[in-house]
Length: 205
Ligand SMILES: [Zn+2]
Image (cartoon, rainbow, N blue to C red):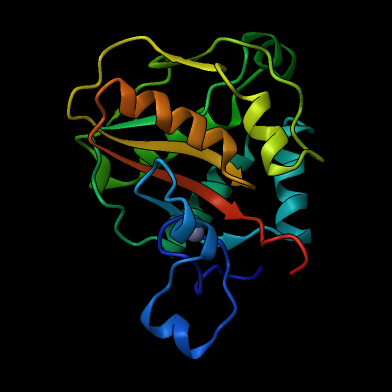
């Protein structure tokens, strides 16, 4: 599985290896419009094999795979920067009820249980509420995703000066985590990272 080593320092978008990349590793869209989170950690590039693993985990309900996926993350990220809380991307209750679990929450729990560096970090899986049932996003453009998610999240408590890591499985356009980061920053969070397993390359790459 390809590792995501040459990527934007802000949003982890895989970038072509060029001379410029050695000096300024930031993608065009982050330069034009910085995202509402400080950085994304996504150690793998989402491709056929990773897609197969994620599909088995989420849709075939192979919950035992959480340990494997968490160790794939750990294998590439030796020392996660400590944050105060991990906030998994919430599912709308109806979707969670149908699937039986929230895969991002399973991943966050596994990371907390297996990373000694995170021992002072807490899981806050109820901090952000998905207040609307949004349409499934695959096949939507970045703009469609952003409008699909408008008003989708609310924060239940103030987050003054909180350092947050949003946990997600795969980052595609980043619209979901950007919508979450917006509400967390508005509630007072001072630093927001996004931790996910894999990042999809830009369309056409
Ligand atoms: Zn970027």
